[in-house]
Amino acid sequence: MQQQGMQRTLSIIKPDGVRKKVIGEVVRRFESAGIRIAAMKMLHLSKREAEGFYAVHRERPFFGSLTDFMSSGPIVVMVLEGENVIARNRELMGATDPKKADAGTIRASMADNIEHNIVHGSDAPETAATEIRYFFSELEIVS
Ligand code: GDP
Image (cartoon, rainbow, N blue to C red; front, side):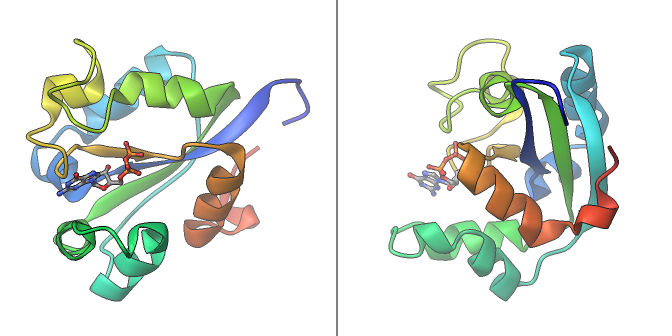
């Protein structure tokens, strides 16, 4: 990651995305956009692990429901790498609420509602670093 502007971000295909069998379609969108998959694995979070990941939202009214959902089935976690990839991934994802997401984005095309919205993507360099560390050791990330 020597090049200027190169970033890493954490992407998650949430349990609804895995259930809808859109893992391939989501990955295809990243790769077609020139984003490199630097790490990838499937896992099934416990309720406690989902609470740990979303700890910043613990005061929000939807925290219980969100963490039930995130621990309801397997997820796919990925490290994406590319120039300005944090913002570019957020553009590909679309707004949190699929009703407000731009046409053609992952959430507008595939998501059912504001909670079951197919993908997660880090929103800033600091959160990307923390979130990547939550799931991956440096040895699991391929340069
Ligand atoms: P994101 O960065 O676009 O994923 O959005 P946030 O960080 O604001 O929220 C984290 C996740 O919580 C979202 O992706 C949704 O799954 C869920 N979420 C956000 N807002 C709401 C809400 O108003 N109601 C419910 N039920 N879930 C929400």
